[in-house]
Length: 263
Length: 312
Figure 1 (spheres, one colour):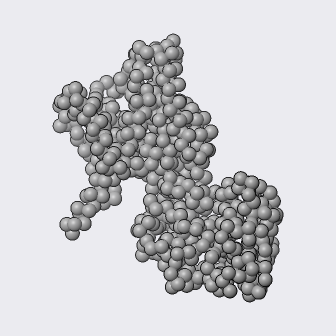
Figure 2 (cartoon, one colour; figure 1 turned 60 degrees about the horizontal axis):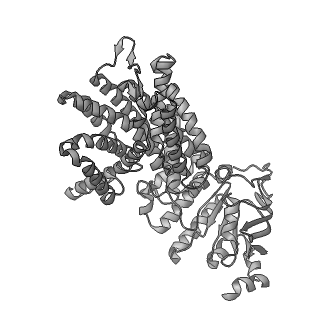
Figure 3 (cartoon, chains in turn red, yellow; figure 1 turned 90 degrees about the vertical axis):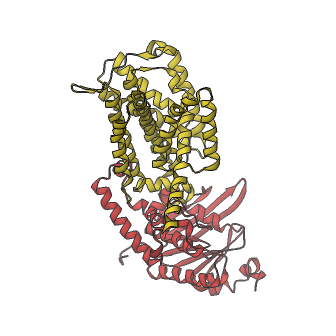
């Protein structure tokens, strides 16, 4: 898929330059800089309130950035709206699965293809042939994705009626349906049993195998250390460390701020 | 199975006049058909965009008065005037929707409420153009070539054809990409945005389509009754349309059809209880909203599905 001539092959696919996000005067993120290399799992870790989810919200345009900028494939995405950022190729999951409960499992994935498809109100109302064709294609593609995520047998179930693990899977399936360049996962293992967590780890590793760039926010250190290629450690909105999992485990500042309580 | 309700309903609509002897009932059914058009449009807004309009009577009125003025006063032909009125109403709705739907929350309710009051006052005060409180008379009837829609029966088939067409288009819409996007944004706006849906634009579009449908009903109403007065387009009719959506079931197109027919015909049925009819009407509404908060149609369907499962 990615040719050797691709200029982004090894350069950063996402770059934050001195970004600051404020809430009523408080700095949730201050002058944060980092770069994300493609086809890696990069985890954002840090204690509660470190600004991890805020960072995901800043990247996806849910929260505005007050200073600095975020570059996606070399172009600034600061100030773009969430739907524009999603259409460019950054999709996400949420801390609590935010599925469309009023739809079936299949329809949730089909919504995920929204930015890759074009039919509007007019075509939809009149069922024009081009709209029918597009529907058939995305329905088939969505079934393939559900198959990949082990959800095909539940395609016709309402999204609210499947298990928590399946809901998490479905949310990732929906995000992947957009064929994103970067997938953001916000605590995909929260509330899962150990066995479910292993299934989730396999799923995330499987996506990386296929070349997916993933930014992961996760509390469970065992999971993070096991699957991450690179860690970024936040504390009170400031980056206090960065590196490979084994290096981070040795970093004194990080241990004091975060791991210290547990080790 | 999935496509069965539509032909069954259409056949029922075609056959119904054969067993109705009374022209009065036909007239009530004709008004019900127009209400179906308005309520389906309003439900797209309420059930799918998560927004409430208390100004649909004004859009209904805009359609009626634009049709009346353009044909009677300006001498335009009837048929091109109807889409023209819809287009003008759509532009007005767009101008209201753009600033209010960009804001989070229910600002549209206030904006449409205010708009309805303004339109109502203009209808009364601008008597040189609108005829004022005494109304606008002598609006031309509908006709195609030499064929005049001069009886309630002919109008019945025309209006119900329009209502069923709107029903079909809406059912198509909700099962399309745009329909899924609407359902997504009504259920979870943040997730919809992060999935690539331009929720603001979608909301404005739904609102505009919804207003245009009300305008269509208004034009047809004006050319049917041939006399209109501001009383039909007050805030009370807006409330009634919202009630029809709620009784039928928010987010259910079939429910809107059902709710509009039921509440349009209920007052006629309640004539038999004479002075108590308003009381009974109110009581029925209260009971429905208390015991079937999702609306009668979804509740009825769940009940039927449960019964079928019990049997097998």
